[in-house]
Length: 287
Image (cartoon, rainbow, N blue to C red; front, side, top):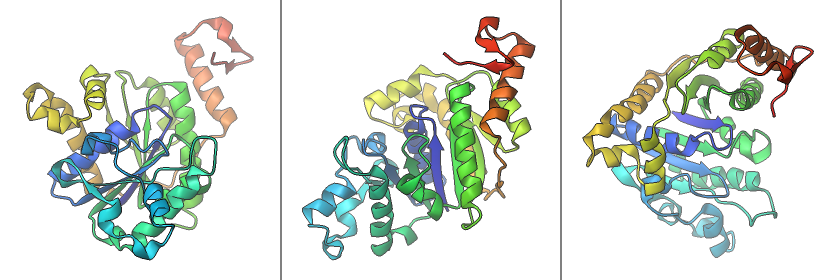
């Protein structure tokens, strides 16, 4: 099974991806996580360091694919999760999306795509064009990370549109949403009522999750020393149990931008959740 993980930039995709990778490994799966971001820090908490990237390796081999072996680009992290970082060009130069496409091409040539039970694509922000949409071409499911705020749901809606479009030519389905760093889900519920899709879990705002990222370890690794963290690991185990049940998934029908704005504006008006000065002509303006 191949799962592409998308969501608003800074929403916590890499932290969730790494912990999901370990949760899957704990369920007996052979897992490969592919970081699809020029920052190449997706797998940091799995390996404990910034591993060399695909683009670095290709450059060192003068782009001779035949000279590259799996061990040149695949690093084994905690709990035997395999890790790859696509990398990217220098800031302000070239196309990071192109590198993602080349990464997929190289891994297929190395037959790495076929040696794992689960492949996780941790994809840059909410960019769903060009090479950054490439993981959707190879995935069975897309998993969207959001929170209970407007910006994250706006990004989720754009990703939803990409899943619908890609599903026309690929066997791709939306597995659903995972909400991160939130105790409330009222806006999420309002959105999925208008745009039906599963909500796999709601991860509350827990400082230990942020600290684990800073420490360069997954929560599962930290929980070996601090048993009070086990309850957080259960969130991730619950999500992977739903994914491993091979959900049917959905082909979503996204809202238009205007529909989404109106939906959330009406919600705020009804619930008086914001300063009335922010609402004009029944449209919510986000400062």
